Amino acid sequence: KLENPEEAFYELAWQGRKTLLVKWRKIKITGNDFQLHYQLSAKLFLTDEAGFTEIKSIEDLANRYGKKAAAIKQHLKSQKLSYKKDPVHTAVAALRYLESDSQ
Image 1 (tube, one colour):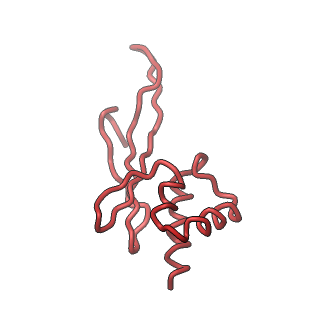
Image 2: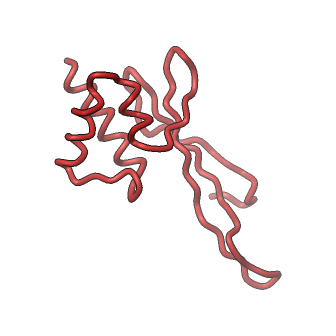
């Protein structure tokens, strides 16, 4: 539970050859002294030997895999997954597909 709007924490979303971390943060969107409204914000980061890379779209993730980019996008489309609607689940599904495909 985030008490302070400035606080953030990382969640491990995927652990394999690559690691996917989600940085969760509470953002104040509206409010006054009597009523505050917050929204949870998630930023995704892929970690590997090169360090942290922020993943802002499925293209950011897919393009890191060169020739497999089209296959990743096709797989996500066939599963009816959308990065805009559910970035965490979609990124995890892409990484799971990549790791199962390369075995």
